[in-house]
Amino acid sequence: MPPAARTFSRRDSVLLGACIVLAIIARSLPEAQAEPIAGALRRSVIAPLVALQHDAEQSRQAWLTREARRLERDSLALRLMTVDEMAAENRRLRDLLGLGNRLRWGFVPVEVLRPQSVGEDYTVVLSGGSRAGVRPFSAVVAPEGLVGMVKTVDPSMSTAIVWAHPDFRVSAMAPDGSAFGIVAAHLGDEPERYLLEMRGVPIRSTLAPGTLIVSSGLGGVFPRGIPIGTVLDSLQTSEVWARTYLLRPAVLPSEMSSVMILLPDRAAAGVEGVWATGQGVDSAVKSIVAAGDSMARAAARARAAAEEARAAAATPPESPPSQAGAPERTAPPAAARPQSAAAATRPSGGATAAGTSSTRSQPGAAPRRDSASARRDTAQTRRDTAQAQRDTARPVPPDTTSGVTP
Image (cartoon, rainbow, N blue to C red; front, side, top):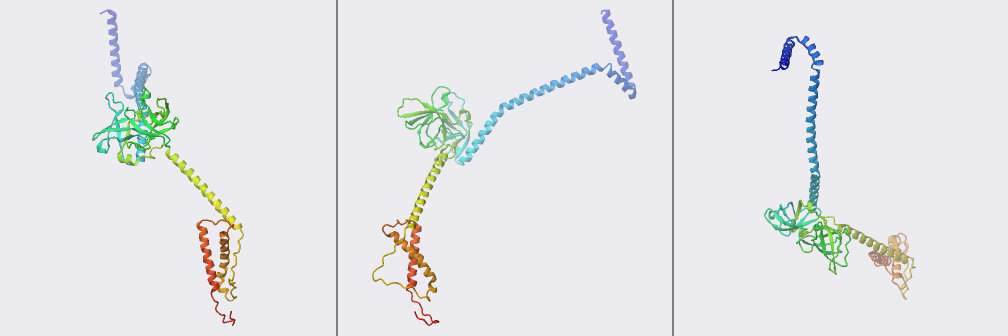
């Protein structure tokens, strides 16, 4: 071993021995004397070591905090990635519950299970079968509109074709019934492959872009009033007497997760009013217009009746001709007047009404009102006139108090 190495080795040994001796002395000192010495050593000799330990502890805490924050950011990013999907799913489930409340009965809620085999992109498997009442050719609907039709049924599952299937057909119309046609899949290139066509629309019927197309109910498979899509534009075809329109489907493929199957009884009962198609608004407008026309006609009839009544009141009554040889009626005595006061007052109004009625029946007078009130007035006038004639022809008893005999 070199001399320098031996020198440093002896020095280290001496320092170690001195430290051990000082440590033993410090441990044996009383607490009142050891505390000032320990404080002085911490402030002088051990201060760099204490600072180094503090820095090491802060570095350790910073590293642990950084790791915790990184994990928190990763968790937050993962939650943000799923929050939109969860919100969309919740919104769709709420819409599905709303559709069930409007349908009330005759439907089976199912989940869409997409097949993994190649070539079946337009066929879906549904989690409902014959045990739930599902039958072939049942309509499959969503809160947005028509999805497809059940093709085959198993006890617990069923297979359905969606609107993009090449064999899908549905009879369709405009909500106001101005145009009818057959809706099928648009067999074009991507991305137009996921559009629809409305074929066979009469040449006289024109559909503007944005017009809603619903099922017409013809054919007995799809009930009337289910939204199918909206008109995008017209297509140029070789047909001369018919038009073809391109439609945007009401239900997109990404929204086919939870659907409903309409049972045959519910489809036969109809689903009009379940989806807001604008048909109810048109019916309400037509009802309001019809009510306004009826009120206008009633007001016109009331004005005509009022003018006729004023014309009849302005016409002077004509006295009827006296018959030859007819005896003239004399007024009853004064003694008889109190007994027939009410009868004496009624013939005057009745005579006036009778005169007016006879005046109206004569040529040149105003035409008679053909109404229930006029007939009732005439009958009352006749009864009053007959009562007055009976009161006039009745003999008056003698007045025994005055001794006057009429």
